[in-house]
Image 1: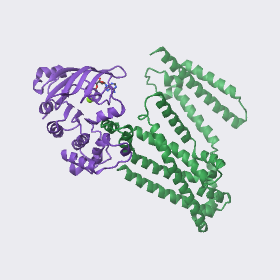
Image 2: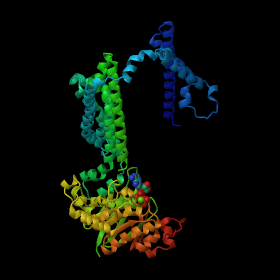
Image 3: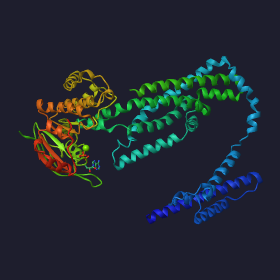
Image 4: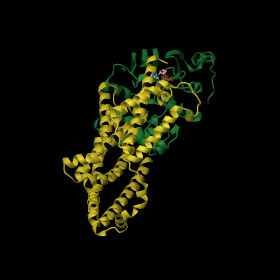
Length: 335
Length: 255
Ligand SMILES: Nc1ncnc2c1ncn2[C@@H]1O[C@H](COP(=O)(O)OP(=O)(O)O)[C@@H](O)[C@H]1O
Ligand SMILES: [Mg+2]
């Protein structure tokens, strides 16, 4: 083994052990604080944890050493080793801390069902009087999802070609463009549509337009990624064959690349619309308009029979969208 | 007969340092059916792809039909490529399109920039495409999608596509290597036909000596990027065979 490699592995092992034991001492401190109301300063937690981690690593019985430095295959049963018990300790503590943080309370779950009588009776007795109002709001939601998808298509389509590794030239600029677009797509996608909705409801005011913009941004990012991955997976053979006939670059793209990607693109896009209809409901809650907004208002007014009506409508639409989109995608796969 | 292909001192070094071609000198006469033999890795694919610049040669000179291939750029290079049909081992057709549409792509080098954005199926092109499909006995399958065709049928569509270019030369890189022996022979028949009737010059790499003997008018063998044999198919006896394929090789007879 090379020297620098060995050093790297040792550092990795030490950091792993320090991390593990800082985590354990942090969790223990949390539990002490929770049960005995004794506060342990953060600096102490870090120092104790690190010291324990490093010592165990040096003693050669730690998890880090097992992960990165154990070369011999010793067939010792895990429960006869120290690292094995360390892992058990980590899992056990994580479970206890989780239980407390999430405020798990089985007692409430089994005894307070009657609290739901309002909403339950609402669901089983939906108020048909608000059918028209709800349908209007629902149309708003479906259309905003549709427009968000449609507006996202041209952006994602063009961006995806520049975000496909196999089409971008292997030059500095080519790589830069690829990396920038991919990074933006990843970042924008990891910001939930609900966050975009909050931003846009401030920007253009509460309503379906804000919701549409939120879903559009999210869809552009998501579709760019899906489209470009599809382009990266194309069969390069026909592209080369068309190049060999004397076709120019534009022709190569139009006749060699696009026919291969068009039906998966359509499938992704319809799937996206399906997702957008669901998201549009949620986005409505934070100022994106549509059925989500109506649901929020009725829930806050405790009008459970209206809430029941809305819930039924959402369920039916999501169910239909799901079925239709699955059918269409099934058809596209055969093309 | 004049030389339609003249290659002088052709070298190809891949990034990473592999010397795939080490100074190839070769003249091919108009109307020859030149078979390229050689073990895997001997440089056959590299050689054929250098001829239409799907791969950039490192150095050397290539003249095809009087045009300097190496110096050509942009539009000029595309006009040269137009004269050179190419057939691939994996057929390289667009699988979810029809045979006819695939054949039509062979005409792209002739169409204007405007035609390149919309797939205008111009009547004259369609007629020629149908003739070419007929040439390879596939007229009835014109509207069928490629993915529903057999390997042999796909390779014939690829031949029809190459014919759309009105090529002077056809380069075929192991065109029958993924076909069964009987189908392989029938596909080679079509290439032989083009060579005899249309006087298209063909360079075709093969693995089977029997096919080389049957269709080739000339055999060139590569070994480690160099020409180790150049002669007629008849001249390849046991001794020559071992020179090309190594001491341990035995000829397997494929009909
Ligand atoms: N894209 C490539 N990059 C690097 N080396 C390659 C590449 N393609 C082929 N080679 C190498 O060049 C040599 C010739 O390969 P190739 O032309 O494919 O031979 P053949 O077609 O006769 O099997 C081989 O050693 C192969 O490994
Ligand atoms: Mg090859």
